[in-house]
Image (tube, rainbow over all chains, first blue to last red; front, side):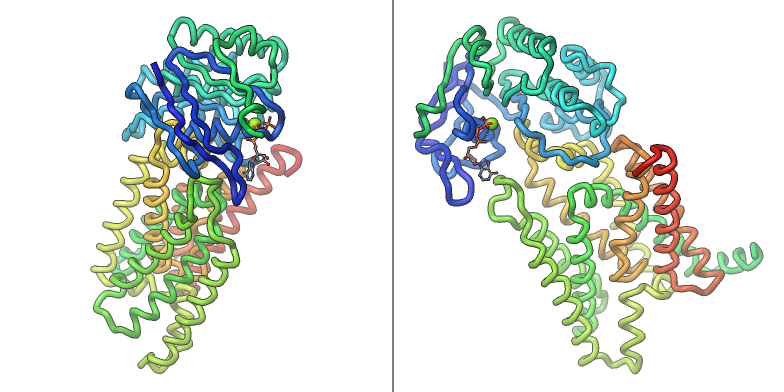
Length: 212
Length: 284
Ligand SMILES: Nc1ncnc2c1ncn2[C@@H]1O[C@H](COP(=O)(O)OP(=O)(O)OP(=O)(O)O)[C@@H](O)[C@H]1O
Ligand SMILES: [Mg+2]
């Protein structure tokens, strides 16, 4: 069963195409790992899938009634600013905004979900902290918690373990595996950790072969 | 002193000024946080000059209510500048700052030119000074102006409260918001319109040149002290309202220009918060 379908997809910046005429399907229940050397276009592809970058040509179809609000996304580099005042809790809760909430309050169930995700990434003790004052790895874990909150059917992860200590990255792999096996989450993960990718993934995509 | 104050409060125009001042400073500080964080402060400044140019056009055309011209023109320019990048999805880039400087200085120059050529009033320089620096114009508001201002700022407030979390999500991380299904383009459009409305309203209070001070100072002060978006928003609103009320009252009692007195109060609070954060952290 196809969940995401790229047809003749072309992505790029300025006057340069990074991904050209790509046909690819991601199936529901996949644990897809994307590998490839620096600058070969993995992040660009994921940004395309996430709808952050508009395709130059071609299309990305969301199949099986998949909605954007059911997608969780962990960007590689956070575009957030150094002096942005925001608490960890505010950031994680903002993951629910795709579900078109109009109310100025978050309900109990959403708050509970946010707490669970903070606990999974072991950041619940940071809840009231100021995001800009966290360490790089702590920030990464908070943003992962935000991605987990938003993800219901599909999780797009761009180098989720980069910057994490060994224990945290092991924990991260366990969380992702658990989501994949028990909650039937489809995973698309960009990684340089080929060993772990081969261990966990059900499919691999080598981007070096796609972009020449 | 107090006697004098109560004496003035008996006049309806003073009460109008206080109501309008509170509402406008509330709205401008709320959206000011977003404007500062999105690095759009200089667009706000440019827009206030555009509003001045539109005001000159309205004066030349002698329309019954110059809001009819100022509002649509400012909103249109705001949409062009804030949402105008060709492909807003590819790394959002607003048009270069040169374009904004051009629009802003151009509008100012054309506005002054128009006022000079077509004005029937004997004191053109005085009129221009009034629109640029607000002078006493807030004390000459007509009841219709007050109602219009109240309706517009109430609308802005309601929209802000309803969409507060959406505005936060988009301001913090536009890409993530888009990836998870928030209609970012629509909200950017909404924010642009609201900002234009606030700038036009604020022009009545402090004058075209001082609008950005009203928008930027309270949020910068709040950001020095508070660390979550919610507390910064609330603090900015409180600071802004207190400064505006103080400014208006001092201006009435001491006979100083309203706009610059309000901005002076804002600057004072900014220095206090700067020093507070300096002492607390032992550094910047
Ligand atoms: N915002 C941008 N503007 C212009 N070019 C870009 C931009 N982002 C990436 N590129 C270019 O697109 C190409 C692919 O970049 P991309 O970030 O997708 O690589 P990647 O495979 O994710 O690399 P890494 O392993 O280092 O994360 C690179 O050549 C890069 O120079
Ligand atoms: Mg990358």
